[in-house]
Amino acid sequence: MTLLLAVAVVAETADKPAETPQAIQIVAWGADWCPACKANKPTLERLNKTPRYDILFVDYDKHKAFAKKYGINSLPSYFVVEKGKVVFKTTKLQELLAYNPEKKHESTRNPNLRRNRQHRLRR
Image (cartoon, rainbow, N blue to C red; front, side, top):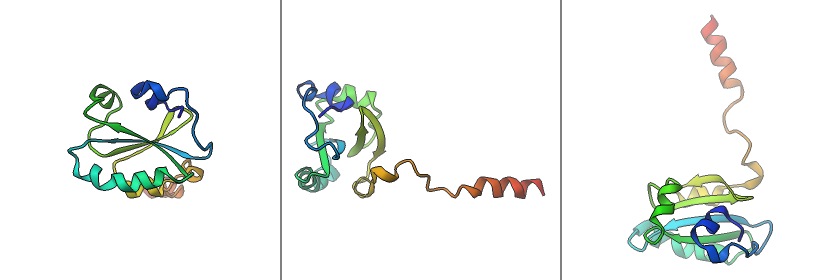
């Protein structure tokens, strides 16, 4: 895996390429004492066995300095990494599963919303 966070957190994985180039690379932060982390781990492990996902599990307790550096305020936390940069962050497994790399740059906001609001303010 060539993930920025993986290089920083787990040096021995720095030179390993992603198993599947099209895989969604995820850094999953968790802890043994976290109930939600324990509940989500079997799902993430199953996903990691599929070619769509390439998941790196990081233990919060072992890497607190890096957790602080990357702004981990709640567990579990998930980062989607592309070309060494975090492109999506969430704390919810359902949001992570709904992530679509093809649509990541499309805005969900109505582009006319701002124009309509400005038009109403001018009246």
